[in-house]
Length: 165
Image: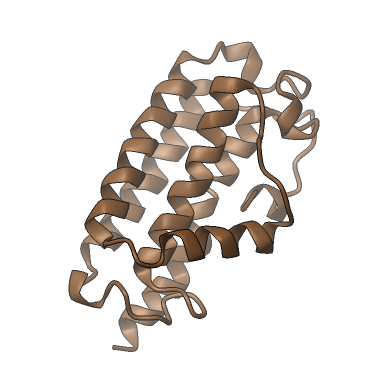
């Protein structure tokens, strides 16, 4: 999953639910502020990150948030393939969808993910063996990797794209 592979985290690392939620919400506020700067008319233009447009990135973010949410709900990851293959499938499945639809879906997923985190018992956040789909990592690492660590992965390229227009 994005973000999770780019951070070195040991099983000894832990975070409280309140700390995690604070980090997620702070990163999300920055993400939403950045999205507010984008002209919806340009949201389909490629180049915001490689060949991806803004709406492609929104679909990508939403997919990975949904993946974590589904894992928290079902206890299973349910993904097949390598990261690049999965991202390509997400791109192809969503490239013709309108921005407003993608944003609404992604924002709803984000709210549901927050609720799932809030409902998770505190001790399960750092338990590396609680969810099989985490590959032995604490679930908070996968949550952070697909929220507060994931948004910044795309933020800088979007800022550069905005500056270049």
